[in-house]
Image (cartoon, rainbow, N blue to C red; front, side, top):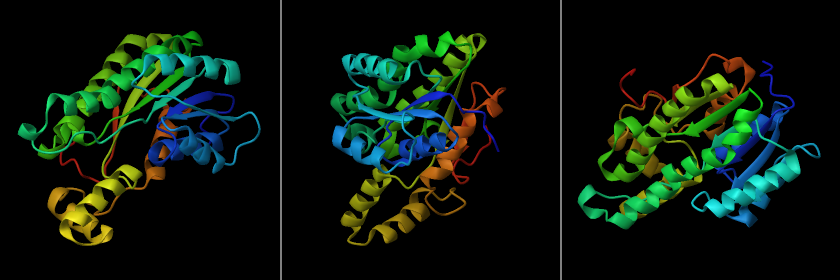
Length: 267
């Protein structure tokens, strides 16, 4: 299916691995010019080197979404290299502070929110003039099943991701008539470096392998995940690419779950 993305320009954050990297790959395959961004320059360089892109269709610049000066510099680099963006995919994120509510201090909450909620706010605000200028634009924000499931040992992350859903809906209401369509995707337990780290920690605590930790986690913590496996990042990236496309011209303010059935309700 031709997604109608040839000639478009996309910025993908959190692009040095996982969902962000696979989204960059999927958009490149559709003929999009892609700017990759993430926190660590060396990791970003290595990630970009793994992608097969024609000359002039792939750029990569490090930036910290927690720092407005970094985002201002990123905007300047994007404009100088590729012009104005048509598409923004915000995939930067951390798991953040874990543990039970009474165990998490203010610093844990602040650190999680700085990356997972305020980072996307700053990013959209920084590039909003680009996205309103042409009369056609797309924003996809990465939320999570946690936004509606609120697991007790992940409350800062869950609250931040619930904020992402509200942010996406509010932006979709505010800017749709400028041609800017905004949607969210909510993955559940995807095979990424973040969940690898979580499962390695669980394996160490249980004295077992990562594979056994994954199985016990699914059985004990994610019993509603009906496909009984981790999702793959390309399974998320394909949905994101569709939402970025001309084919999604009447999709606005929606939350697309990519969760293998993990959330047990339809609403």
